[in-house]
Amino acid sequence: MNTTLSTLVIKLGGGEGVDHAPLLDELPELLARGHRLVLVHGASAAANALADRAGLDRRQIQSPSGHLSRYTYPEMLEIYVAAAAGQVNKSLVADLQTRNVNAVGLSGVDGRLLVAERKRAIRAVENGRHWVIRDDYSGKIREAHAEVLETMLEGGFLPVVAPVALGTRGERLNVDGDRAAAAIAAGLGAAALIILSNVPGLLADFPDPASLIRRVTSQTLDAARSAAQGRMKRKVLAAEEALTGGVSRAILADSRIQNPVASALAGAGTVFSP
Image (tube, rainbow, N blue to C red; front, side, top):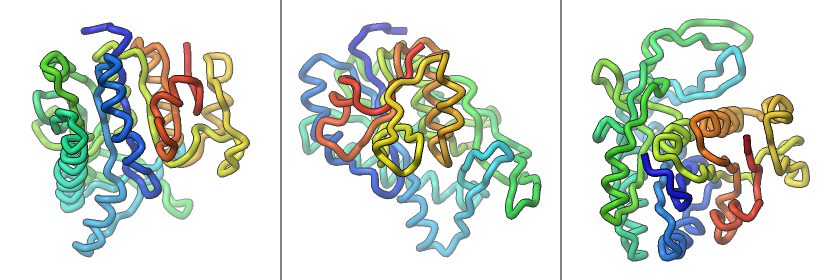
């Protein structure tokens, strides 16, 4: 594990309203400054668009604790893999190549980068009714083997990672991109995990940007968990997991501003620290 202070893991959201261009424009400058970078991305909007074109149900699952996730039944798994490891991943790689960044695209399946355990019985809540789902192909990450990323980084490449993991029985699994990025950051001993989305950070009164929570420590973590809504719950959880794994800080920040990474490192967004 390389614990150099210049290693940054950046998670770029894949939902509606996330702007890729400011980050991609900034990456060449970050590389020129000596940072080692890994980019993990989401694919929600692209998977939704492909599912709609195929006429597939794209239902969300809400857990009893309030976490939202994609219902990844077998046909949706094929759509998700095509969107994440194909369409979005290769589009980002191509865009980076046009900016003279030597990016390489891969998923968590490649090199056993991400190994996850399939959730074989998921408890869900819908309209107040509790039910169990048994045909879902999503997973919880158990291991992150960062050696393949170290090899790429030492070779001067920028890895671009799609959140598709290898199951313990060899199946492909949909995994949460924020938590995948946290596992990768911990595996690399990164200085920071930066999660970029379409909001300024964790908001105490969503969607009011003036309610931004700027710093979260162990003393204020319970309040941060309570403030998180919807998918932000997973981002807070990912930040927690990164810190537990030894990452110095995790930052939830805005993808839509210029130089989003430099701004996050300078204190914009919500900074989680031990």
